[in-house]
Image 1 (cartoon, rainbow, N blue to C red):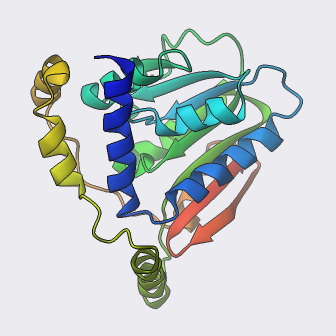
Image 2: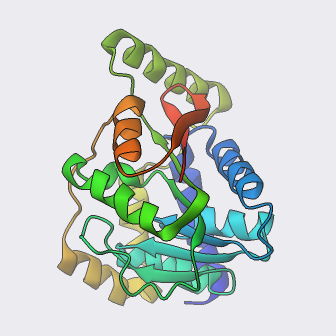
Amino acid sequence: MDANTARAWTARWDRQQERYIADREERFAVVADVVAEATAGSPAPLLLDLGCGPGSMSARLASRLPKAVIVGLDQDPVLLALARDGYRDLARFVDVDLASPGWSTGLELTGPVDAAVSTTALHWIPEDRLGAVYEEAATLLRPGGVLVNADNLYDEQPVLAGLAAAVLEGRAARVGVSHHEDWATWWQAVSAEPGLAVAIAERERRGARGGVTELSVLRHAELLRAAGFAEVGTVWQSGNDVVLVAVR
């Protein structure tokens, strides 16, 4: 698939994602702010994009940090195909299932990682595997390196959790994204793209991922600290849309 076609599909993906994450572009910018600050002393920082999807975050990091070396990881063959065809000049994309033990084996990294980021991806990892994912990520990061997780993270207090969800819904209505194409419709459309026929067949062969794991900020923080991160905290939030940072 040519780069323009791949990027058009990714732009359509970004638009449907805004239906669920109204401030998605701001969230991307916040992640990039954190990475830029944390890697300010590195002339060519090494970055990992965990669950990179079609390359949306990787592309924005490359724009913000043009000298960075970026490696994107994902297990969805369709989204990987879009990333590789659309942004092969900006990052290297690797077929990796983060839920599998030893996922970092064979990444062929050039040195310690300066920052690992994830946007709307780690909620696919079952809770009994997420701690191990954080542990493995910690072994790759240099001291002082950061892991940045931008995702829907929930409050353990049910009333506050409901209020946070209402805030997110209200924001979506105010900025006019509630009627964007939904996730299922995007997948139905992209499945008819001739240039992705091989990737679509492989996705069907692998089968669908499991359900969403709804964990609280507190639970993520517990897992991160147990994995060896020294500091963990929220740097941005809109409703239950959170950017959580952990320092190695």
